[in-house]
Image 1: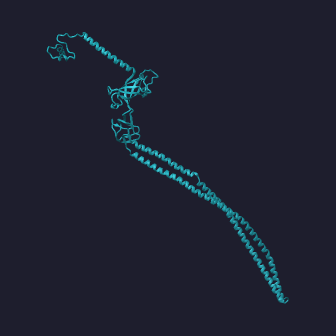
Image 2: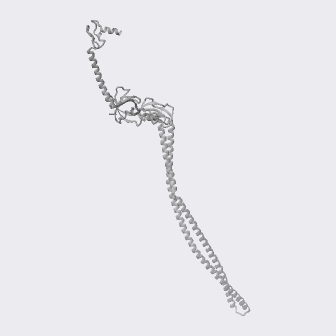
Image 3: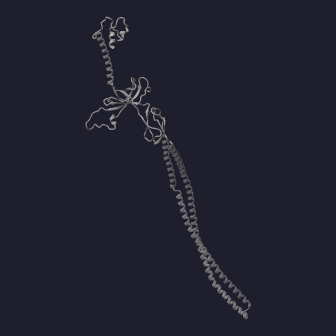
Length: 474
């Protein structure tokens, strides 16, 4: 069928429509009777030469441009969009009560992601708060006890000082009394001696009085006998009787004087003995008062001991220190209560969710992965032969496979300190054995700056997208 159409086109009959010959191409066919140009005609040769010249010029132009670009840029397609993914974990062991987000959902910084069961943590906060309140009250009571001990000690000091002064006064009084008693003993001893002398004097007078009485009695009997016989007058009898009565009275007086002197001696001796006893008692009282003085001084030393206040102050300080410890426990309990609300640390998207309601999570276990919505970058793995002239800040042309024809621009942020091989689990050891040289690749981080047409925010750049990067090194 195709061959038939070709024949009919080249042998068009007269009067046929003009567009019949045009279906073979844009160039009109030859007129009837005109000879068709051969393949080696000058027209075709000129046309072929022109087309070849145009192709050659284009090849030279684009070749020169490519060579100029390639000589000033280092290019690799071993590159991908990357981002600092965030692994959301729990800091406590607790059961999941609610999940507020889903996979691929955009989230804002501070937005609730997962809510854990908070009943146990709330109880611990209340318990820690009560412990802090009780300890603060105990610390205040301990500090008040310090003031009470100080006041009590001051009162006891005053009382002890008064006791000491009283004991010293009593000692002085007892000593004075003892001294006075000692002087009185001397006086009383002298009185005893005087009374004893009076007794001796009275006793010495008694024999004379007795002799006088006997002589007067004998004279009275003789005078009475003579008067009876009439030898003498009766008047002499009266005189003899008066003499007798006087001698008897003198004797009685002498006896009374001995009795009185004896009684006085006994009284003086009793007074002397009483004074000696009083002096002994007063001397004993001095010892008692001295003992009381020592007791009062001991009470003063006991009440004035600084260790009492220091010990009470130490208890108050320990109570305050315990408050600090309990405050730390309260902060920990409040933090644990806050940890039951797991919030997003960044603006981004939920990339992968690994948690379900009712699951008990443990610290460090990954609950979900967050992909940041900004601060994305390109990780380009250049060969070690390409990075010799690379420097931080050099401009980079970025072509994203997802957006063909869109020219992204960026710059070199940093170069890896080592090749990828050094960060592998089992780095190659080429120091011994058969050494096979393999060109290593080093990651280069590239940051997006702008896009020629539009804004970066208009393009959904996601980690994992394949890109091609060209770093301008000259």
